[in-house]
Image (cartoon, rainbow, N blue to C red; front, side, top):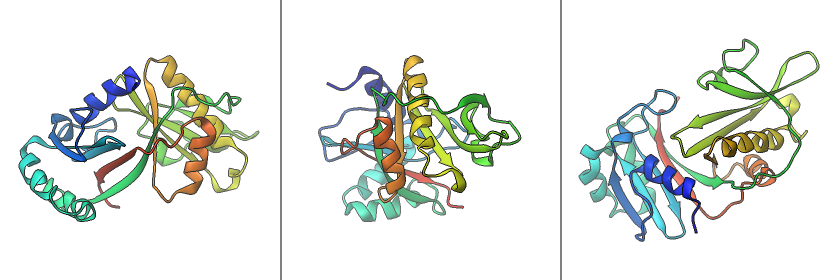
Length: 220
């Protein structure tokens, strides 16, 4: 049985869950409103073994449903233009969640995201979990994307010099425990070919259940 928090997160984030169809396209106002960082996410999809729900702006619903009849790789390639963002890109990801993070020792402390020693990618987060060296220099950090009250996605980064010490997995597990304490379920997304991120997720207690995620984002 699906965790209640995860169920409510997917309903809130996508507009519908579950589906018994291989691909179900739904319209949601969430796709035209600013997300956790103030940016729009014009297409978001989550797939489980029972099927995939693809959430798009309501006024693009008919056009995307027509596109859904094409091969899935073609759908992903054409999706940005069909949802109104032709210069953006679509991406696939592995979607993971944890109900029992690995009991690893804590590795960091929670600080404000505007701390001057932190890297710029952490700035959009309200507060972040950070590991520092003995001189106070940043080593690794986790930010929380609070999509809604039920689902909080973790994002982790480690400096090149600090890799291989197990900091990322400890920080992810520590942040996941906080998310669960707050009454939400922690999620974790990574590119299918990112083996390092996959190892971090597995070690922190985020198993690969065969779930996937898809989205459209601004290309840099």
